[in-house]
Amino acid sequence: MLMNGVRGRDKGPGSFRTTQNWIGRANSTIEQASFVPISPTQLGPGMDRWLAFLSKKDEPDALVQLAIVHAEFEALHPFNDGNGRLGRMVIPLFLFERGLLCGPYFYISGYLEAHRDAYIEHLRDVSSNEDWTGWCAFFLEAVVHQATENQRRARSILSLYHDMQKRVARLTHTQYAPLAIDFLFSNPIFYASHFVENASIHRVAANRLLRVLREADILKVIRERKGRKPAILAFGEILNLAEGKQIF
Image 1 (spheres, helix red, strand yellow):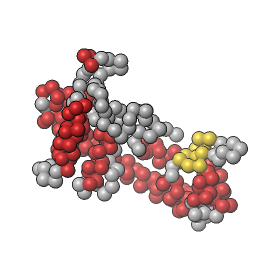
Image 2 (tube, helix red, strand yellow):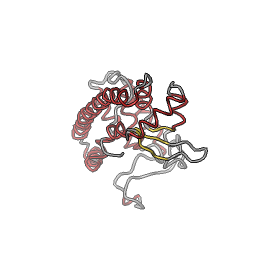
Image 3 (cartoon, helix red, strand yellow):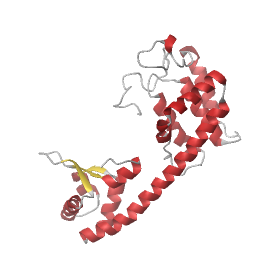
């Protein structure tokens, strides 16, 4: 599912690799690789050991366990493509399963991408020098930093939600304003027709709301309506907050 319609969709998604892969610069040979994962013949037993460790509930610290889980998955590199994406996805799923999150919503990729060189270097040091302490310290720092940033963004989004309730009520003078706000926060990019059909608002009022919000520049137009193709609109402010940068 992760690989559906994206890069790597033609590389046997969901199946363990049957050939040797390696990590290095584009077009590099295995002799030039910066890291060579486990051989395909040993991959099955390696994944069995990884899953056994992933499932252990008696480790002294769940976050340190997760640091090891992530590093070992990337070292195994079990698929032809998508290993980085899946390895990062395991992080919030693990935290949720262990009861450390109320939902699998912890986004750590922002920190890892911003510190990509250090991330790769620490993973290499585990393989080359068995520096597990350095890797775990880096991973825990990433968790702390990203958790703080995620909390800041969540509070900003909550503040925007309360502000929008007042703004849209003033602009539209309609009882449907709260329903419109809830829809926008759940569907920040949407077809205009989807809003009209699914926001639980009378069709005439829904179209008027869209017009007023566009005129107030609260909704940005990604694509104007053309023939049977409905307009695509975006609630830019929430997307800017979620991404941590100006998109709209």
